[in-house]
Length: 186
Image 1 (cartoon, helix red, strand yellow):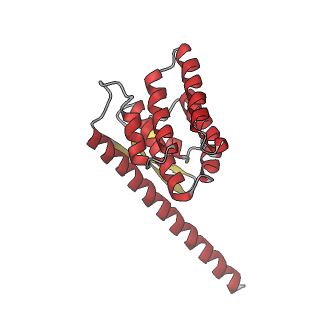
Image 2 (tube, rainbow, N blue to C red):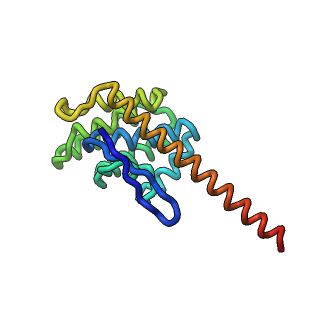
Image 3 (cartoon, rainbow, N blue to C red):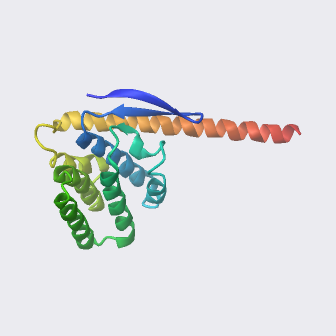
């Protein structure tokens, strides 16, 4: 269902996955973002939002990447989530208004709902994997993966992301150790 590609960014290699369609790609990106927020706390969203345009960001780990208007939709909702402090009714009003205005401009309403529902579920304290199941339900049937297939795919994305994070931390630790050794040698 997916294949890996690798891309070098500076001295870092970032694994990228190929999703079967844009709906699954969007859920994969959201799963990585929501998993990071769950692991590191809500303040992790600041860096996710700030780095969204960078080639190494979570939004570029899965191919095809979300087109800009859909990525901006997600980023706007994430920004509002940070500001509202558990005001689910206002968040829902905001998202529904955005979906309404975008669907009138002929954007894919199913994709917008596929992206919105996991954010809503996560905001209501669902874990990332379960939150993405809410989004899966908005995918048109001809594109919708089965429950187990999506769970396995998202877990593969997560496993690869965790391995890359560990490798990056190990590389950083080695670089700091080498720097410290060079200072002591002087």
